[in-house]
Picture 1 (cartoon, rainbow, N blue to C red):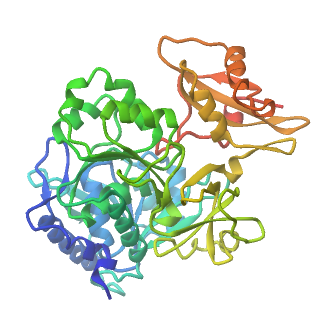
Picture 2: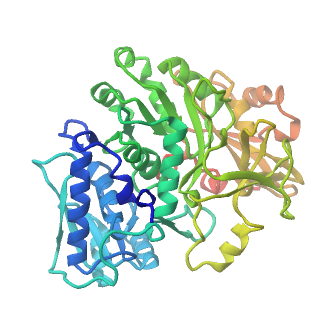
Picture 3: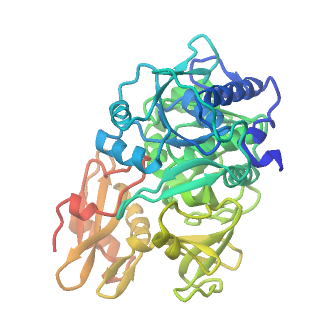
Length: 509
């Protein structure tokens, strides 16, 4: 067994006194302290009868304790982070589907998950932050005495499942994705090598820690590289630059909507920008508009590295490289860990330039969805995992995505990439944000619609914006309806929502 193939093994990489976990205004936790916390956490869980393979649901606010709980509990059990904003009905589904052995909730935190767990006979364990200790330090305290002998005690092995997450379930029942230590450590290594992370790097995490992006790209990749991650209470555009000034990160990672909100406040924070020490900015989990990439690079004076990830791949699949190697706006980069190919519906790999489904295979890819043979039969075929994304690879291996296959608009047989329409509309100086989506049509089946947020103080009419789009797009791609909003609906991780948007906005055939 290679100990670096487990989270416990990766945690051995950092020097004893180097900082591992931080938080704004808090004392920092060293790598040595993190390792000791992991050992004591595994021992505490084993004393409660919880061991390798047992599922521990985490309902915790964003912050250093959520990061350390994930890292330390995963060393000896299976973590299942859940969105603390869920309602009782959602917790009922997720705790049942997970077959959770215990629920970990932060001391004093009110959550409907407590009542749901009690009704289902799931023991509740309170995570008690050590207010006088370093960031992320905690103890576990069961609400009622728990004891037992776990079937498998001690530290996890590479094949053990470290993390289980559900897919978004936008159009169907959420699928349960088990990710082993082998999967997660491989992905953390891929990200670290792509970004050339080292002991001196400090990541400012603003991503939610119930999602693969924040857990692996920000937290685990930093720890694996011997660096540090500062965990905020969550994204807040009003506080970003005060955190930026206090922490002086070398990088941060976010989704495009977060980058856009940060840009909106950059002009009034010039002093913070001048005092920064960023090496790069990373963007992932949704397509970054080229206009936003250009604005970020001009504002911060560092390269923006767009990456491509998904839960089933333990996050990263492709990434643009750091300079001096080239990077391209509109491309999610080259294969950065797993093999990446483009495949047709018959299972044939396609040559450069051809459009088809993006497929991957590699050590970071899950072995399959849990208890879902139908989904596995569709997604794991011809020796590859089928991502559900459409795209093309060029001769140099750079991948460009044209959209989710289920989001491609089928207008009377004409297939339209919503990303292409987004990019054109974003070029209008009055447009701040846009999401193109399918709306019902009585004869064509689907037609093109767009939701637009305008820049502050600017105005434009629907007809004028459609005329602008018509100068760059074929007529059948021009949105037949444009809806102006003050805010576009987003998912819990900040991604814009295309699926179901027509229904939410009341657009009918």
